[in-house]
Amino acid sequence: MDGETGEERRPMDLRNWHHERRWRPYRADLHREVARLRAPGFARYRVEVRKDELDDPNWEAEADEEESTRPFSAAMATIKKRVESRKSNPAGDVLGWTPSSRQRLRRAPPLLHLCLMSLVKHGEEIESLEGIPDDLKHKIVSLLCSNRKMNSRILRTYLNGSTTEIHLTDCSWASEDVIQDAFTSCNINHLRLVQLDLSGRCMPDYVLQTVLDKSQYSFPSLVTLSLKGAYRLTDNVLSVLASSAPSLKSINLGKCSLITSCGIISLAEKLNLAELYIDNCQKIDVMQILPALETMEHLEVLSVAGASTVCDTFISRLMHACGYNMRELIVADCQKLTTKSVRAIGANCPNLCLLDLQRLNQLNDLALKYLANGCRSMTTLKLRQNLFSDEAIAAFLEASGGSLIELSLNSIAKVEHQTAIAVAYACHSNLQNLDLSFCRQLTDEALGFIVDNCSRLSILKLFGCSQVTEQFLEGHSNSQVRVIGLTGSILDEMEMSKV
Image 1 (spheres, rainbow, N blue to C red):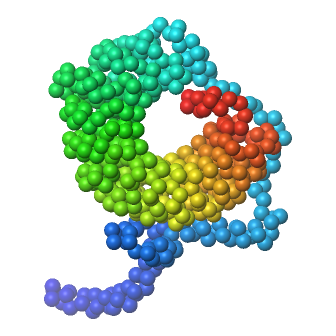
Image 2: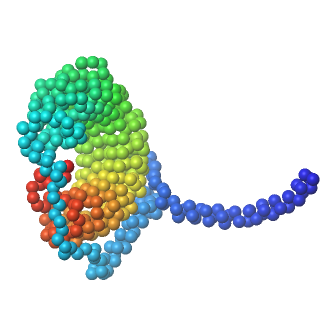
Image 3: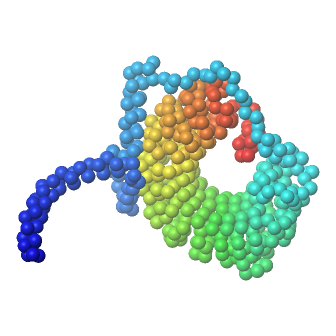
């Protein structure tokens, strides 16, 4: 029976095989076409950057041809059609914004802000901070520092108790004895965060060395340390610090002018750092510390703003080694950087959330193409004082700007109509902080269109925008936005924006 059954089935199997063979190419083509149409919605575009490409004079032209079908190019094509339509019919291309005739309720200062500023004004009368929640206590002390009202008595009150964090944003008022007493009065074994910024006057090596000499692991719980502006610190203390704080993950040594490459290499060898800030440390040669940085597998935040040795080769190699985990990258004022660096960032940093490209005058519109195609989840982007075109900025925002919470286009002279449309449509759901200072091509209509469409916008900076009139200030309908830089006390408004 088995043999007979087998003979009976064989012709049927053969017919099915011929049927499948006949239709298989058509099915494959159908599935391939469906996959091609759906792919752009899921893809994270990655352009491999080889080291030898940095010296190729034709790399921009080749890259432009390769990326012609990607999100930025599609957005740019739409924008160019809009521009041509506007040229052919100027009267027909209007934003459709008109000033509201209803009187808008003026936003009152938050009660919390009024209370905090009252405390700051009468800071010398503060007797105790006991019972105040830690986050509010830190905010009060930060405001006292920024308003030059901090003193040693308030510091003792602040540190009284089992604090785990110290937030001193300005220590320029303090002496060496004050800082030493501060560490004596608190349990340093429990400290997880220490911020002693602008501590150059009060933080020479021997002050920190005295604290570290108390035990082998003086700061066993310390995770975050900020000594920004400690211009008297040297490499000698960094090696001891690395041994005394084995749990340290984040360190800010910005403007520590005596720190050299050797000190950073020592930190990288001893600590498993995730965040490193070395802004404006002119004695650090980033090419010397590059091999050490390339071994930092968990590096997520890097700030090298103002470093004169930062170049395309440094960015390309570092992003190739550490780019996938990179969340924040700050390269403002690194004047040697070109669009090649941004290409490497876009190719290797799919998880980048914050990027600071302020004052890089060698970038062109292609830089925005690489960011749009590679970095699709950015929440903070700072492009201040660059040479990008209105159309390129608009294309970037329409392609990848939907997740932005903070955007700075300060002093970009070409920002105008197309950028206004892109901000209003592409960024309306998340944007909270927008800096359009010195963007003097933006009209009242364009600003009103942005503000009324971005319902979550809370801060709009318009320093230097002398073209703005009462038509916008009184005519927009967004009661949540605070416009800074046009009227009133600038310092007061800036402080209010931080609360």
